[in-house]
Picture 1 (cartoon, rainbow, N blue to C red):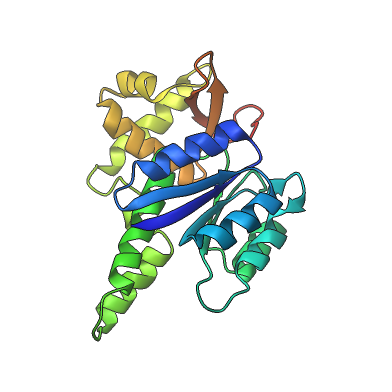
Picture 2: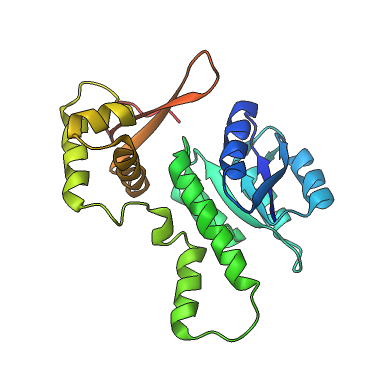
Length: 230
């Protein structure tokens, strides 16, 4: 079992990210905290394999915390940044400090799960004994950066993605995955896979709208169409 620490200043977001982690076989959440101080304490106590880390924390900058978490040479956890910070300086700083990836908020949960599954597969392969060839090494590095496994749309025809973009362009507002599926004439699962890939590529923007239940509704629109709120 691989241990994951969730760090986010918003308790609702932290709980949602923890749900995604818990849904991935082989992963478990050992703690969910909301400050850098609590994150340092939890990391020392639980020695997690992976940390999901927010950039904006009330008592420290997430990039500084990333550097601190990655300081130990032996047993340092991998860190996946989940943040609304879109400036290249933040991305460069995170990569330089050793982040395994950098996902923009609001995070598409299907994309997050894909990255978590790829990371878990990577850990499983790295813990095996024996020698590897170049093909295996290439596969390990592909998983290290999310690879095709996190994309989720390899088995679908490219025209479907274009039809989804056309449907979003024709809409007068944000659309849910179910609404996109009905407009295009595909299953919700197919629409969701394509929307996740298009969101990762930057062609589609994802917004979260919180309702009375506390669980967010995922709404999609073409990137640049209207003001984006993270």
